[in-house]
Length: 248
Image (cartoon, rainbow, N blue to C red; front, side, top):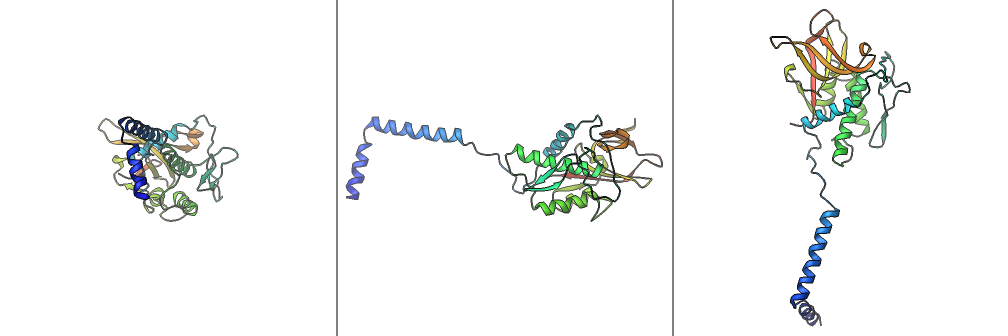
């Protein structure tokens, strides 16, 4: 019986008309499947964005912030305050809460930009918002390093990122690109956490000032600022620590 049944089915498709109808139906089903379910974009094997892609994401996030004083600058010494303008959620856990008065300070704001830029990169690829090897507890620990509460308190951003394999330190200041993160120190001992925009140069091409984006008193909150590399209160070029996130 099984062999007879097989022969009968084979004969039923032996006429040219039926073969053409069957082939057309199969072709239509395959075409429909390709239309309905397109292949998702390829994801990097290590879960890291390309450096140029991530710096572009950082700059896109930065441009979305108002610079009219909406988010004022505030630095509460000794307080456990994240200094972020919005709630930050990661893998179902709230890792930062927005300040009710919309205030922020430099480390909190740059950390917020880092998280938002990574989230934006994931959303553009329809991928889960996740950093490789980091759960919510790990991201909170990264935030502590970013703020300088643990690890290398001079190279806070570098330590936070490089120690977790999320990016690399940029050794030569001239190699900095817009969208890199910078921890700078001044000759008077004060520091700042910023997003690099450009070096301002003199007629001989030497860097004379650093233009960056962050939050500070001089801009009444979020905004761009230019600081000199000279003078007793100027930026110390030997202590400008740059980090670039992603893979080459």
